[in-house]
Image 1 (cartoon, rainbow, N blue to C red):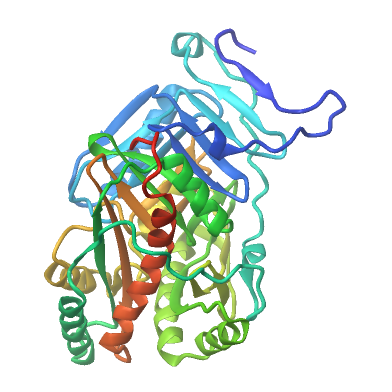
Image 2 (cartoon, rainbow, N blue to C red):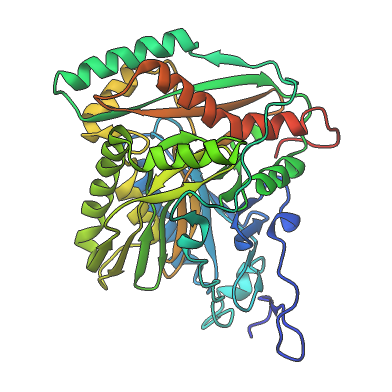
Length: 442
């Protein structure tokens, strides 16, 4: 092993693995975290930060810049991690961390600080870490109404004073206009979002992340540094894309129903979602685009014949697995994610028409909400999720978003109700953590 490049295998002398690494416990404000059921990465320190200027095709440009940076670094196991905006209307930051901990069958720590030693002739850092064989997505979803997820708790007394942008009434007007546009034949679907804003009462980010993980352990828990010293945190249910070698999987989500604390009503809500013509229509539009986008890069592509139920603490979703075997010419995980982004699950279809309608009907930029969060390594492997159920936390304020997919069958009042349900994941977690001391935004 080359001097200055330290690799530690967290394994007992007997060969039996030690206790699993708690990635959340290893995370520090200013670092990057993405984990699900213990599998994922935590990255600390800053070897290099790359700014991706605002403008069209930002995610695609980010992928090219990440590939170039990793190639220049020339270190096995190095990664680029990022949270990218929904639209390229603000600069994006790519992080090459000094230290990366990747959970795997044999967890490893990689210290990437001594760049000079790495760049010596023939320098290497040993074999790249083997990432954990992914927990099958099916383990996180219910094929029917039965599930191990606990129904969402009822709201506690409000601690944060939330301001809606836009108001429910203004959102109804926007949805009504969108439905009229869809029924006129200009597009098939559009996703409209709204946000809630509150003053930051002194949130402890580590406690907030722990609360999100406790409530939704099957979601992708994430934390990334944001502009101005803020932090972008959340627990998102949707795997946009995971690439490992020549295998790729996407698990698009679309179609939503609120969960109930009552088991009987919860089961009824799940069954109703599985047979909802409106939600099945909305879901099919997303799956078709994902499959069509990945198909040219795959020698073999399989799409589940029908959606299944995926549960969070607050909602049921329809989800469909799209799995493929990549061609040798396939690009990196981030490049593939950039081609998929934004899917109809967060934008609409056709994409250009939906995007123009969003720009006209939404009062403000989405920022990092509904963008991409994840990581990619020098081999092109990595994992990217759609940044939903998330919060932008600055020293002054907390902002959360929620959206609803609008199709011809939509009803404005029900779309407002859907955003309220989706807000609940972050509102409940934030209310539970509000007022705690000792925390500061990353």
